[in-house]
Image 1 (spheres, rainbow, N blue to C red):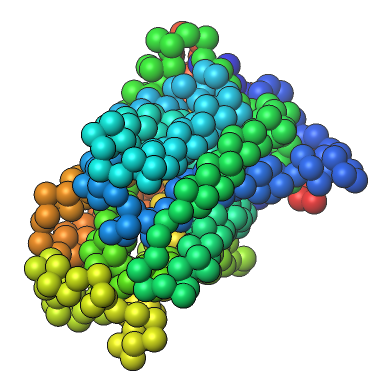
Image 2: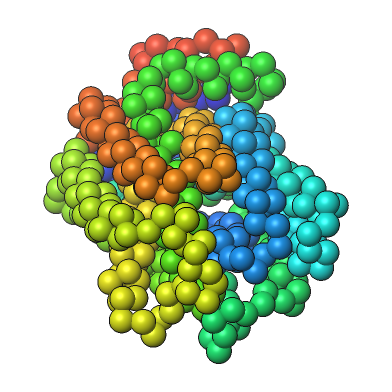
Length: 503
């Protein structure tokens, strides 16, 4: 498919040594990076920061809406829950094939198309606010949720492919953390605005102006891809080019999707971790933050949660990019850290969850919800902060594991598509379970069990698949010709020892 000759070092790696240069076209090519402003503007980390700002203004503000989605102040709460079911159902289907779309149309166009759905989704909340309780507004909310699922599948697949393909191997966690920090600033800013709006009220109202301001920002986010550098022109910090191949036909592209799964089956061991990665949001947002606290306290919790995400991603970047530690050891160390966090925070959460049920929360009413001035709030807000840390550590680890399996942008598009597809299937199931009023304790138990199971399944993948370097033998799609035939390694151009230092 790619007609690609690998770029290999004297170690024989497709990516070079642990600096991680990725696949390139024949002959192996190292290019001096531009200087001055263009050097900064075209720097891979700058481009990943731009992707981060797209997600800051689109899915980041979507995350900020969690404080409203879990609020009794949003008319038709079950319409919002069902909209989430529709969203994640279409997200799951689209994301599975989004890698093929991304490789065919290119990442910039895929990002732009994907970002358009977020403003449409926010308009659904605006419609519910203007016409509370009407059938038309509820149906519109569900419809835009389904449309956003399609768009989100495109956006997140393109984002994941670029985020994992632009860095060198030794800096992948740093690039993931850069993206994750900027992306989650959207949640921080949105939650801070909600906190400021509702600070003097334990009830409060979600105004039309709030939704309109979010809508404007998401539209601005959709414009950013127009100013990004064409991925085909990107040069990594070690001088190797990023190659974004285009399939000659849809048939070959769909075949590549199957080949990626068939020839790298270890990715299947990450599927349980994918599934759990959005399942736990429902309990955290609805059954914990939404159930226990009043509106201003939920706003503060949300701001602290998304702030903790930034810290969590930086912690994992430090661990997974540590110098003088082998990549395999970093993988096991990162896994162990997340495993400990899962049991610490869920054990902590259980001590609170056993104290309340859906019935007891209903009996409290809105006026009985916990406020930030209550003495019992301190321990509970710190738990929510730790859930934010865990989420970022989990997502960063998942992305890093996929990045450790390949440097080929096309293959990474498929992997991130699998990730978002299965992740969204889990989210759809979790939101549906909440919509049918599954007991809080059952939701919590499923969250803990799925998180633990996801990590246990991932462990053999790390042991069997994560190596010190990504070799050309691992890059099956990079050896695939335009007819769908996989060329033997010895048909790929010979290694070169030429090297350009990282700048």
